[in-house]
Image 1 (spheres, rainbow, N blue to C red):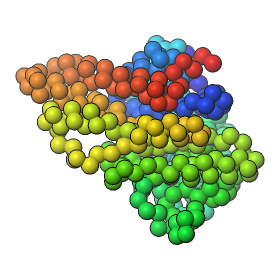
Image 2: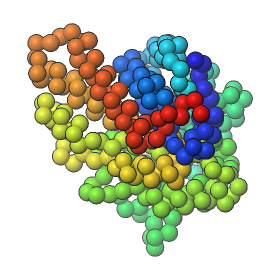
Image 3: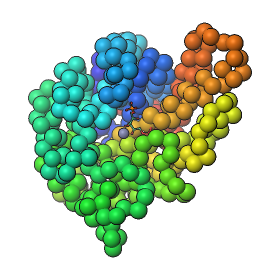
Length: 321
Ligand code: G3H
Ligand code: 13P
Ligand code: ZN
């Protein structure tokens, strides 16, 4: 099965009101777990690779591993660069055949962000590749200082709906990563905090009203940080804090219904893998055959991905739509 273009995957996801899982790949076991889970669930999938993953595994190894996965599977798969931090990195990935890249210039002032994204878009579109941009800062659900009076201020960390329209129109990006209280990692919230779904609706509506249609939005930081995985890690010798917190699956489902078409998950895969490996070492400290701990680790990640695509993202069964 050749790579499927992200544009096609997004169009189908928007029509079917499901979300694509964008899972981070760093090594063979993670890739096998993700692809086997999606194959069994008949789910289309986005495999995403960060700069750190390229540094860890070597881009050639990752490319060859994905070629192997493609040759052994029937489901649609796209390859995406996660958080590209420069034009040069995006260009390398486009030249290597990625179907999609993210240019993350969200830390730059607005005009600079537009300019950097525009440059990547111009190159990507000449090479049959689509681009994800980001507007706003993934600082979590803390009080947004730019929001005095409850308005969606343009100076705050979270994405401003009107500015999102301007950004999409001028940068030409094909999808937009939003900041609505989301953040990366295993410690996302303090207490019972939530995504700002009202803001997500306002962004979607502003894009629609501006004639950009059912525009694809991307939710980063979508791990749920399941308590049972954290407990398992700690039960078997880990020391994760008591303040771990993720996005509730209910919030992710709501975001999917509003129109988050791509949902990024990495931390939950890391937790599943770590829990399984710790369990083997704890129960059998004499073990030193990597297959004996990587096999259960792969199985646990696979189980988690199956759950996500079936029960949260609802993309299971849509591979051959
Ligand atoms: O957004 C962060 C992703 O989880 C990738 O993390 O840069 O450590 O590979 P990484
Ligand atoms: P998590 O840390 O919540 O898994 O987010 C991953 C992500 O956004 C990758 O870009
Ligand atoms: Zn991210």
